[in-house]
Image (tube, rainbow, N blue to C red; front, side, top):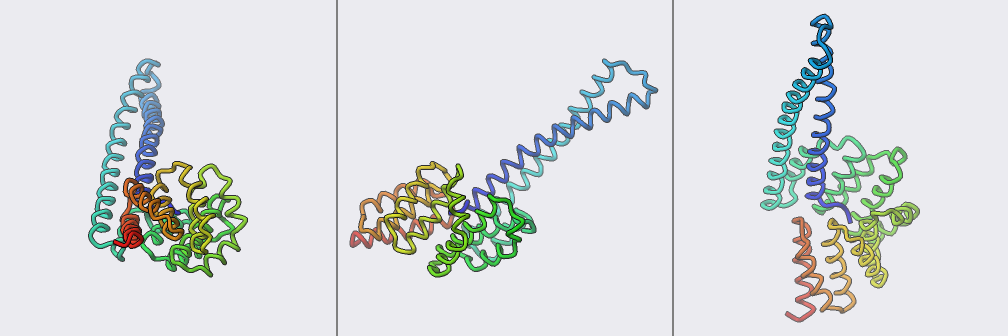
Length: 277
């Protein structure tokens, strides 16, 4: 399982607000000090410490007000972009214009980190082959260990979501050591979910259920819905229709994205078919 598009937007927006505030405070601190020193030099170094402190404080708060105002304006514009993306997605789905708007929001995918974010977004829209082509452009050897793990997670998730069993098992074989390392990390629920999807694809329902439950136990809000949807599918395959029905209710409470809503509808149809409705 990968982080959803909307969650990435919310994380990006939150980090941007905090980062901009801290940056504004730091810039104001340096700028205020610079203005104070300039005034002191221009006046022939006649100002005493008290006057210099007053100049510094006035300059600091004026600069902070200007910089914070600029940050707020930027944040509002970013929010408007998110609203445009959400509105387009709800009306037209994952079309080319959606990805153009998304690329405009996250910026040109010209770094490994941005490329993997963009690849994750392509998977959410069902563009699995395109997602793999995107990550193939990344220089794997240049990635830090955590991003190497995510690289293989994206590749495997795209293959299992596509239903390509041969490719999925091939990717897992190539990246087995990276998956084994990834599941030892504190936040490994996403990787556990992906490995559960591989087991589900291979018909290994017992191991799939164990992995989905382990991922769910991580209590990560980002993967709650995905785990419920996957467990529901697993229960359908093993004839546990009552459990599958409950997973539909649980997934409905945690649905965050258009893609999840579509897959929940598909799961509900399977549950209805299991009950003979």
